[in-house]
Length: 329
Image (cartoon, rainbow, N blue to C red; front, side, top):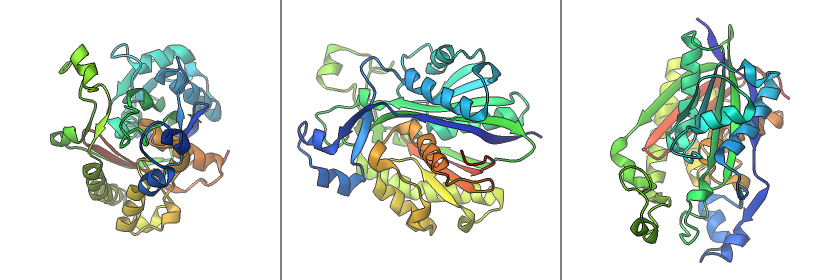
């Protein structure tokens, strides 16, 4: 059976920076309040006219270049996103056109867990012999769905994209994946309107139902409960122990969540990667963005064991255990 392994990594952050000081002039908040509760100091904003597919295309081309490949070499393109350019066509199809890829393309929508779900799609396709080269992208422009009068959510989110090239090979890179979802908790984190259940209308816009709504305490309790369970399940499937994880790369949602997960797993905080201070919560993009930061920082080496942790609306969660197979860039 062919195995899935990561052969290319790339990421992209927009140029515009929104700092906590900027937010102080927009809503009733402070740098101290934001940093203490979230760990975030700044986040990036997509430029006017810059779309999720634009972010995705930049990251995709960088990942392909890192793998020494061209867009024509891709057999399957999977985009994880919660902020598609349009309801249809898919952001994956739009991205494929922008980079010049001619292959099946599909979106995966599992909120902030979307990248892990997309990596699962890629791994299954490779292990089944249906594809040999899969481009997996996590991209979001969630600031387009943020209410900048709501201080509880507008401080959290940023825009960006990250991508992996996943290829078939004899060496096993993706060791195990554990996924989960609890649809009964959908109201904890949602955009209530502008779908088929509540189409856009003057009333919807007046009530600001087109923006993200979140029960932060419930999201915190959910994440610190299910993520350690998911990590342990994937470790059991791979025959590894927590102590063998070189890097845990969680979804960058909140620094307090990251610290609590580390404590519950018994992992030293210095082995739990965090770049949330400078990116904010980039949703589906946060894991590949963080991995690329580790990779370009020469912190990943062949044989490194890396855990990728996602959690978000749905409620959804996922953990992928990866043995790194690439030389440092």
